[in-house]
Length: 236
Ligand SMILES: Nc1ncnc2c1ncn2[C@@H]1O[C@H](COP(=O)(O)OP(=O)(O)OP(=O)(O)O)[C@@H](O)[C@H]1O
Image (tube, rainbow, N blue to C red; front, side, top):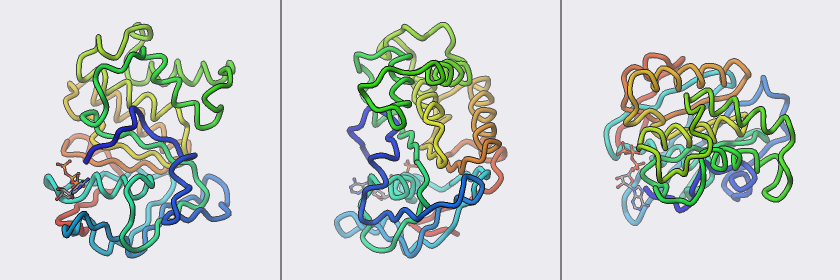
């Protein structure tokens, strides 16, 4: 699937869908993602088939499955960027950060690493407000978490594919969202970078975030609290 957004999308845009119901919320510890009978049909092809499932806060879930099994569609449905044909996604009022597959992000955006990660603060700060010291600290720690210290001023176009991938993950981390969705966050990364990302995602769960990522990477699958397998749009 392809998305035109250059970045991880923020909850501000994702929770407005009619198909995504935001409840009153009951504090970060209680937040779960709930899918009820979620079905996504593209043309005549059923990509998600009547999926009902919940995701607890503070838990990392890896969604595995073969190519075309519906992993990206699932994440897109939760993020609100894929229209539902049936069913509901309940987010309990939580903010969502969504890190799309790198292949869906243009490689030649005229942005530096720091600018890309700073965009992660827009969901809370707004695009036109100056970042606060806290924001800048979060941006710096997110860049450090993915091992891109020293690359802050580099344009995305001057990075390797794996480095660009890490910048996008850093942008997702910088959102400090309650629900963090990542589509193949370690695709194409070396072992060291994979370990950094796994640590960063574990740290997100420790602060209470619900982390859901699609992956083909067995190391990342092993690091998850829960592993789900999708086949032909259904959990098996
Ligand atoms: N925008 C779209 N238009 C039409 N069909 C689509 C679209 N996006 C996905 N599909 C179809 O939906 C099904 C699930 O695709 P999806 O991208 O969710 O799979 P995936 O498990 O993420 O695959 P991969 O591991 O290759 O990334 C596939 O059959 C795919 O062809």
